[in-house]
Figure (cartoon, rainbow, N blue to C red):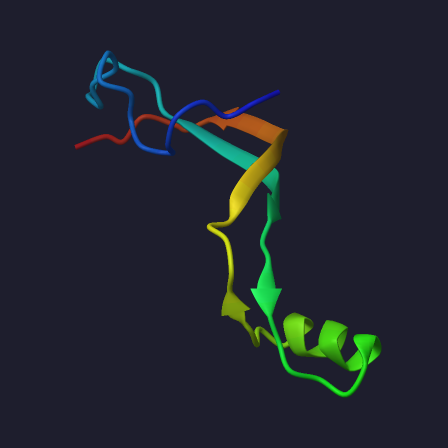
Length: 77
């Protein structure tokens, strides 16, 4: 299942009291390339896991998997 567009409301759907709201849990696979300095490949991997590196390409969303969808209860008042 793919996620089209952004996570915001589509122009043809206005958030309002007449539209039900859903809470959606999903996993995404994002590919990112970074440049790190390290002694070897193992250390380079650890550096990336620690959030180090200079981004070389804009991250790309490759896959979205919907895990759970549940309708939110209407808010009263």
